[in-house]
Length: 150
Ligand code: ZN
Image 1 (cartoon, protein in one colour):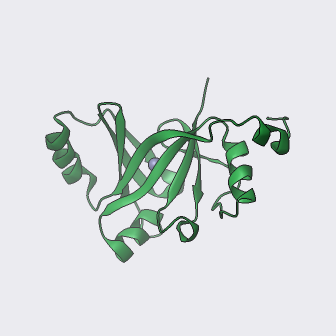
Image 2: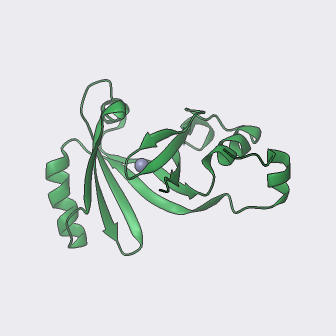
């Protein structure tokens, strides 16, 4: 729990979004795409994970310092199923690493961004995550993610 008031923290000038944590790509078939990205990067995924609450299964690749997440829908209600239906395969979101997701959510809301889940949820790869509505971010779905420590 973070007890430092937002107004004070804003004056502390914390680096808000520190770096791109990963890029999420929506795919129709994870197995097929895993082979494709393995060829592309010359290395297999280092992790597979299903996030049942989001209706997705994911795989993660490292490419140098960069991370790519592939996402396949596991049911028709999944946000990934809806994305594929509307836009087809491709870049689904860009995730940024944040130090304090509660603080970031409050900061971005105060700047007028629409946060899709005000209470961070447990995402893949041991992260707390929150998403910004793409209507306020030039059509790009932005994920905030904070590493869960301990
Ligand atoms: Zn992600």
